[in-house]
Image 1 (tube, rainbow, N blue to C red):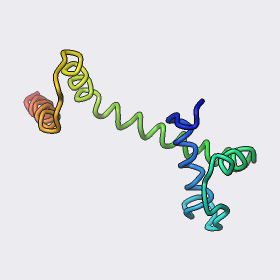
Image 2: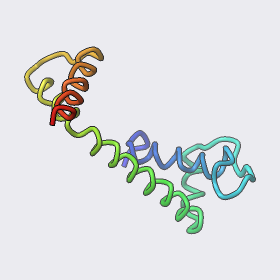
Image 3: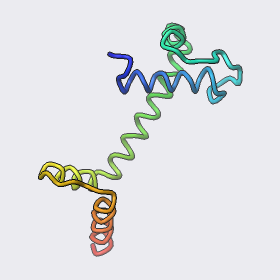
Image 4: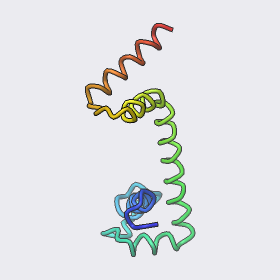
Amino acid sequence: MGSESDLARATALATKIEVQVGMGDSLVQRATEVSPQVVAAVVANSTSARKIDEILQVELSRAREILMAERELLLKVTDELDQGAVVTAERIRALEEEGASRRLAS
């Protein structure tokens, strides 16, 4: 897993939440910078690793909920992209409105 992978970036962000910005279980700032070395040191500690894993699991669940809630729209956008279309913000809004109209009609 490279240092720029989505999981590595999410782990670094969760570590920052836990040890730097006071959003973890403790208000004690344990690092002024969250470098790859800090992430490695924090996740080497089993207690910290569990806390970071909990943050990642919660956010994974939240991401899944968002994707499932927007599944219909995402599939429409995917279809348009597969057909070679350029999908603008305006087109996404139009697809969103079409979906809302259909839901209201049913």
